[in-house]
Length: 258
Image (tube, rainbow, N blue to C red; front, side, top):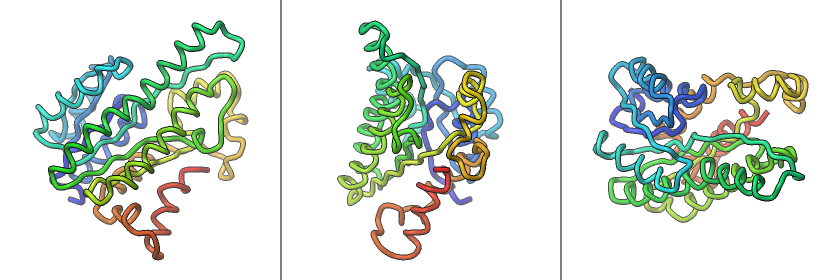
């Protein structure tokens, strides 16, 4: 199996993208630590689908203590980890003319879940990977983090932009220690979040700017995430030149950016 021997923690695993990532990783031979916030039933059902290649653990990533609690549980159950997927995320909307207290609360929660939890988990992963033969971090960013976003959801776009910068900083600072990092930046993916947007704004608004005129399927995100964890994907960080590196970069960072 391509990922045999790997144990990978996936946050936000009960959503459509998280489930697809877990299934793809397990299909390639990895053991998967399935994180969930509240939906225990969905997490346990997902673990059953993984045919013995996973565990379900809960942690509240909207709380500052959540990442450490999650990491400690993951280490206790898996023994050691070779990979981390920071997939957990929320998308809140708040108008610029909302009361300041409400505005600050939305921004604080969005940044805590979408960005700061990934910051803390990445810190813990770096410390672990550098002393256990290396490892890989995959951060689920978004097209919104590269092109800006709507006024009512600026917090989401800002958190994803910060996540992309975090990924680059980890790659630059810790690659020599065997710690690699990759950010995936999908456009619209067919999830509950996308359906909620369509219900409010219409599908034409969601598909605007997507040349192939369709949303990505969660399975596509899962497959490319599993691909990133294969040994060849180290090219994405270690190599600065060469045809292979350019092709891989194009696949990872642009194929889903439609």
